[in-house]
Amino acid sequence: MADKSLEEKDYLKAVALLGRPPRTPFIIKTRCANGCPQTLVADPIFLEDNIWKPFPSFIWLVCPRLKALVADLEQQGFVKYYSQKLRMDKDFRDEFLKGQKEIADYRLKLAQDKFTKPLPDHIYEILKNTSVAGSRDYHGVKCLHAHLAHYLAFGNNPIGKEILEKTGICLKDSNCGCESIGGEK
Image (tube, rainbow, N blue to C red; front, side, top):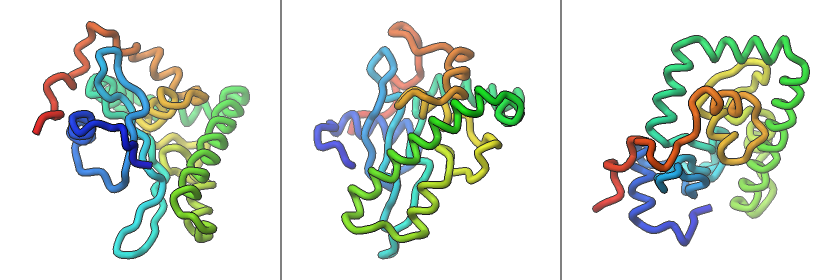
């Protein structure tokens, strides 16, 4: 999935924002208003030690401002709050499950495009039956960062939508914290 048009400066900045070397190729899917990478979408499978492996949590939030604000929300108990909301609010749960099915289908298509032959059963099963955060429990929330990244990159994630309402979008004059990170050799 490596984006051939991704300039080296953008690639280096995205890797610096990610905070580690990526295991799989990625594209910058969305940017903050100031142009910094906001979300990355990676290949959902990778080859390691000559073995293909699934990578279900393939959408990454890299904006420092949003990452910090979401971490604060997690510390305030919003992971538990959204797990309870999924159990108690049928309309919210139905919207969430619809979005998770759509993203799983998209993830499978990306994997199939990369693999070129039928996916091994264990890879197919994991990519088909896990949430955007890689969880098999669709009624439990694992990582608010993944849900916000999903919403920013593709929409259709009510958890991510509500998180963005709490954090606010990155405005052009916002200091997202990425301006001085990476991007240069």
